[in-house]
Every structure is written in C-alpha cells, then in structure tokens.
Image 1 (cartoon, rainbow, N blue to C red):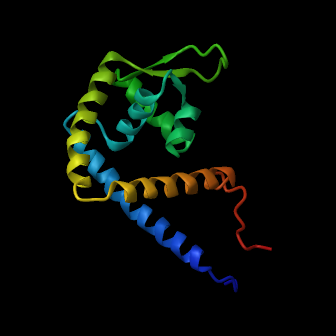
Image 2 (image 1 turned 90 degrees about the horizontal axis):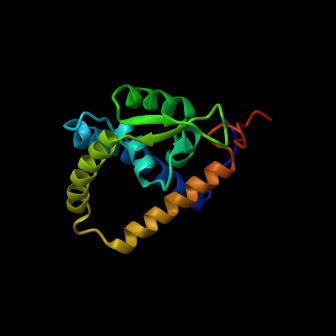
Image 3 (image 1 turned 90 degrees about the vertical axis):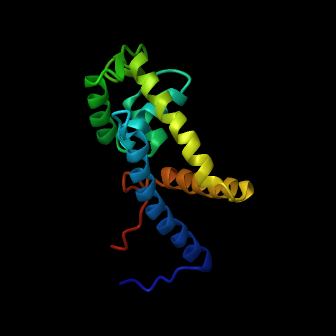
Length: 164
C-alpha cells in the first residue's frame, strides 16, 4: 500500500465519485422501469437518446464517446436495436468500415414515448431541489468526465497504478 494520502479536495472528489456510482446504479434501474413498457432497457434508451439528440447519424465509436461507454457495449446494443428495427445502418462517406447509425421511425416513436415518460418522472424527482445546485452538480460531473477522458482513464492510459 502506498503512502499517498488524499488531499481535502481529493477526499471530496472521492465522495462525488462514490455518490455517482450509487446514483448511476439507481438511475439505470429507474431507466429500466421507465422504458420497460416500451420494450426498451436503460442501455437501449441511452443509445437511442444519443442518436435522437444528435444533429446527424453517428458511428458506434461516436455514440460510445458521447455516452462514456465502451465501443463493444454500444456495438452489442446497436446490433440488438437493428434486429428490433429501432435503428439502422447507413453508409459513411468519411469512413467505409464505420457505418453510421440512425433512428428508424419506429425507434423515434419508442424514444419519444420513453422521453415523455421520463419528463414527468424527472420533474417529480427534481421537485424541491435547487436549480443552481443541480447546474453546479452537472458542471462538476462534466468537468470530471472531461478530465477522465483527457487522461485516458477509460483506456487505462494515464492512470498511475503505483507499480513504479
């Protein structure tokens, strides 16, 4: 065990990370409940959402980056979504081997139905919370995500494993 001790800011960041882990698990479970009646899971809804919110079709790696997921996870989800006629592949003029993924009409309808249900749910969840606090929390999580991405944390690059 190393002799490195967390700073006060490091301790606070650790609390944010642990709270995020817990919230993520609860949000995924809630997502499964919210979308289940539409034949979706939280993972499928997440991919549909990335496509619905994008201004144009995306590749699997682009979806993965936007959602903080691995390409393999997104690829498996996209294959299931294609099978269920919720998304389709389209040619990518910029990259032959990395096809574009886009919503089908059926996928758009399913996403819209789940999004409408989420709107009512999130309004109730957020009732009584301070908007400024929520905006600060989103800013901090966005900053942590950006730093993790820049440090190569997802790939394991840039992480000091203490094996010096």
